[in-house]
Image (tube, rainbow, N blue to C red):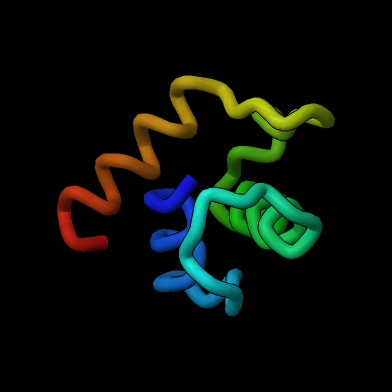
Length: 65
């Protein structure tokens, strides 16, 4: 969750703290990020994320996004 929040924050979608909590603010930020980055078909209604999206976010973070 921390990697995801770091990328969301760096991209300007998230303003909260970098922690392990998946709350409403994180959900809304992730939804906006998914739509902006053409991942809207990968959006889920549960607390899980498609592996392909997570790997992409992890790669962004690894490359210094």
